[in-house]
Image (tube, rainbow, N blue to C red):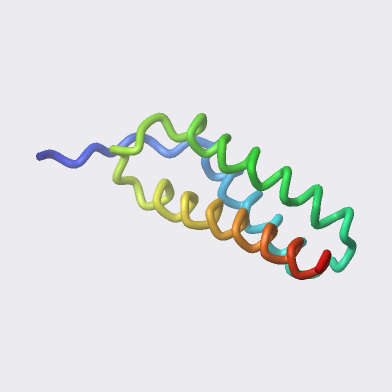
Length: 86
């Protein structure tokens, strides 16, 4: 089977760096309201990943890195919210 590569767009790059920025903000903040909002934003970012990257067959490295970043953002923000609220 042939690997498929799609061109990298500015939206894909922006989504990747936006995810890294939100992980950084999530690790710094200790406000329960801010972390709750980050949980909501992380779910939207994960959904946006599947809108911006056209297909999962894309073997572009940015696709894989961004998917990992979005999953880590979601898991980290939810885990931090659970820890702060317990």
